[in-house]
Image 1 (cartoon, helix red, strand yellow):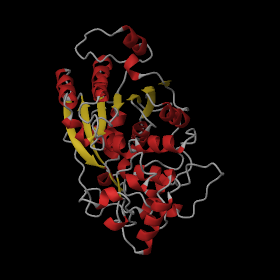
Image 2 (tube, helix red, strand yellow):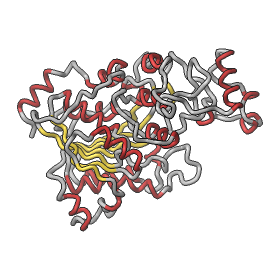
Image 3 (cartoon, helix red, strand yellow):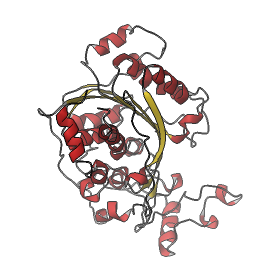
Image 4 (cartoon, helix red, strand yellow):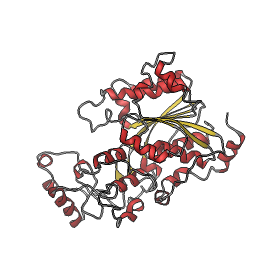
Length: 395
């Protein structure tokens, strides 16, 4: 049951949206974190499975603080050691048990099992209770960019780990994020997960949300599954009439200089001679799509649908989905609007919605840095969903 004070706070702040703040250039340029360990306010315990760099955790923390609630990370885990390093470096001041072990060691995949396994009992002894469960299972097996194991990738079944975890700890709010094509999985992980959660008494709703509808300059569509103990209105975010322009988010980084000779975060990956020529051609002719005669031979001989590849970004429009390939023009529309280069990791992080105080400095290679940023969940996404749940009394 929600406390009276929490109810009053929610009602008094109905006009002040955390989404507006987290998608503003002013917030993204902040150098100092706003959050700190809390002693006041109703404690909300959070678990983040497949936490990655911590985008969903950050969004939830900001949302809870916005509503004068006290966020506490009970448990977070991921299989990517670089992502865990980033997570730990950003959330070390918040009480929590950050586990680096393989999630499959802790959460049984046997959804029908009634009793906890030995490893599950180990895990449950570390937690008192959980109000919010977050999960961003691996999406590579569902992605249309995966031409090898798409729809049948064994990693797809990890989606159901979150459902099993929910059965064990019975959180009030559950958010599972993935690519929109997750619903096409041959094993029906979303359909199975939804059915199991409904059997546990949850109201479950699904939605496909575009990051641009939340104010980010990125056309990133993601499938969300929201489960709540209390029945709440449908989750829906419509695209605005004017999409967020890229210039408002990275325009101030035009003259940014690296802080050292090995600064990966503020420098772009080096282009090959051929790709540099392509980038220079686009800028010289004020083009955004590379003509066929300037593309690799595999793109010239037949019609293709890869128009964005080798493309240039526009200041006035959102970027395409930021992926781990943003360091290569051959992976998508990642050439800078003004310079003959691809965007830097710093620019990519801004487009993903990470503020400047969020540090990625523990990642030591460019490819790993691009993977951690490209695979991250924009913080504003989890903040928007949790705000919807809070305003409708789900916490």
